[in-house]
Length: 58
Image (cartoon, rainbow, N blue to C red):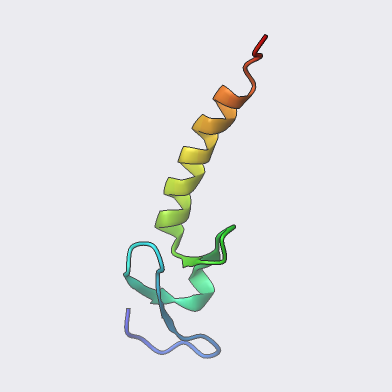
């Protein structure tokens, strides 16, 4: 996305490598700057882990 927006800059996603404006990106738990698409993929993966982590092990 090469357009001018005051107060922001272009940044490459550390996960997929695509270029986005910095104000639309997020910081992940491991300090990577990722786009909203990669954030959604990671959240879906996290949800599956939470379901299985509530199981009791005797």
